Image (tube, rainbow, N blue to C red; front, side, top):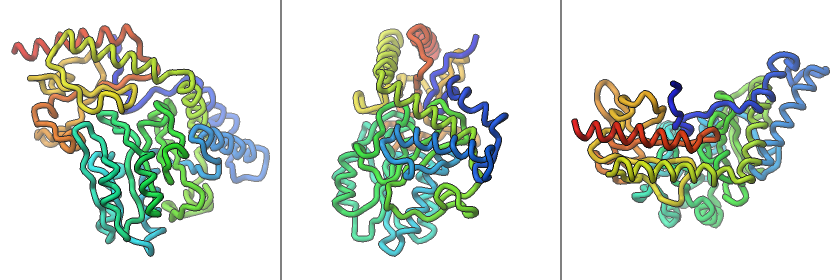
Length: 379
């Protein structure tokens, strides 16, 4: 039997409507968008239609959207490009301790290039305190990068409060929204961000495509150099099929959010959580109860190691935040920053739901997980 998929925060299946949008540009409409003939013009029209769809979903203008190869490139472009374009103003950047490696690793590299980075702590729910952002800003601060929603525990950061502070101080604000776009509203004006990262494969588009919102007037240095694609910011012949796919996925996401999909998924998530508490007991929620993604449930089972639990459950496809390298267990950096004990941290399992999740799957998953937890505890 196919495992129950509870790893939507890792990746999503490609929506059939997105596949239908993509396929013609792999076959019939194969032209280079830079070519001045019908084949090229068809490709160019597809790219601009997709750009408009992404912009509509984010609440910005099409000219503020550039396409990338995914979330990692978007984060690198935002951080490195902004840092070097604004270096004469200062060399200080602020971020949080629970960011994705696609943010933390470029910032470590920027430190090697002479930039100073402040890593803000989080509370026990994985949340950043806006007042700490305020206190961390100096005359040298040029950029703050705080994710919209955490990939492990789902905590949604108070970006609108943080953006009020950054704008008062004349500091740019970037947010990695790879986990939130497609799950909750991500309108850039409401969030107050200057740059925002989108990852296609987190919202039912293929892997290998993403986007970066750059507010008009924000200075960003090119990251890839070559011909003048994407307004001179991202050289390389356009990946028309995947750009078309991302545009369609963003359009679908906006429609589904408006139709109440987040509420439906949150109801399923809470059903799973309640049954795990009833059937297994000794279940601790990691992350905030309310201010989190509607699809994310990160829990620790008392007396159980999460990786061991999932290894014994081939019927469930899910993740833990911790990793094992060279035979040595390594606690998740996110859970460590939240102050979890080693026992609770290593007991954590991330169960993330999605568009195809059903109530029947949640009931079966809860029964399977609870039975295995009891078996491990009894051994």
